[in-house]
Length: 128
Image (cartoon, rainbow, N blue to C red):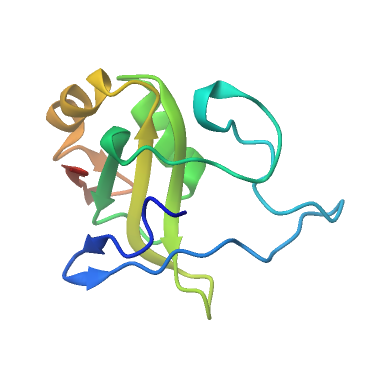
């Protein structure tokens, strides 16, 4: 959260906050994703921006799992997420994928930039 809060993307500063939503057991949503170093558990997820790829021009029906499955074909994926409008919950047509290894970022961008997912041509950018 701290790594991306205030990060400039598409001409605007991102505002990143912790989710207030809960799952059916009352735990913070998305709990259980690995923390930095691969430990399991907790609701925190430390993002390493040097391992992230911004994905643009997503079909509005694309889910994070679709994105993760596609990227998994070319490298090990730590996480994938779709940007959603906080008031409507609808996709903004963009997402972010964090690769497990920094070395996979550039090769993944090379291989998947221009690929088709959900009938749309994806545009990929490595976060610097």
